[in-house]
Length: 300
Image (cartoon, rainbow, N blue to C red; front, side):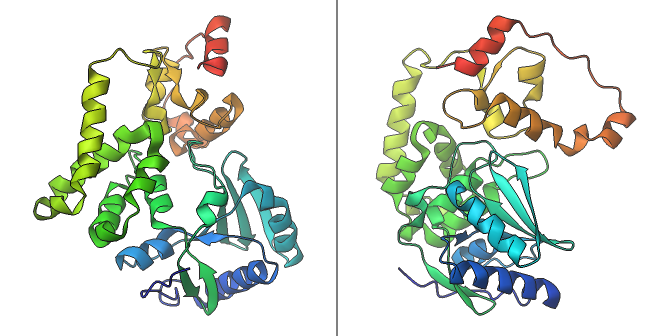
């Protein structure tokens, strides 16, 4: 297990009472020997040196460990909430909270044993912790392309600060069939840092470009009436699935999400909250035939 030289303590980013909550929660998890990894702004600062204020603490956990963590946090007197059963729970101490993340919002990247392999060590508020591996953090950020939040700059900064230390074969394997998303970010990296394009290994770009050329010569392997944009943004492609009849990419086998997960996650979009809906009359829903529903649930 390696040690990261830069390990911001979070003392400068959070208030003392918030720091006390984080410290106590982290120590409780360590003492209980429950595996977890620190991600979010703290991990990003460790890997890039970019420090920014954070509204919460992001901890990656395996879903199977949630019940133990839930009991542990409640025993400490804190409130827990399974905010979104397909990917996120929270621990509250008053208004302060910790995110417990066991998947991605699009259901593509469940946290499993592979995440807990060779993690760097750091200290947060005096507590020794393990940090989510850079490749897993990059994978998670690569799919966040909302209108109000785009993590492409974080991806570029991770590459800029660590290109020679990235496990490139492992990163390619992590993206798997979603290699186009990785290619898009690597292409943008060359645009953002034109003098550093060569830091991405030539074999990586060559392999991805060969895959692109080969795919362009073949008919699409997936149903052409699928919109995978919902894997990048939960809101910006709703027009496609609600009004144009595209199959939601989150309801194909690539994602762990169910129709109920999609419904709950969509209803949580700020613009779809009751107060926002009152300001603008909603569009009438598009009728969906039973055969289309079956296709969305069983599409292969």
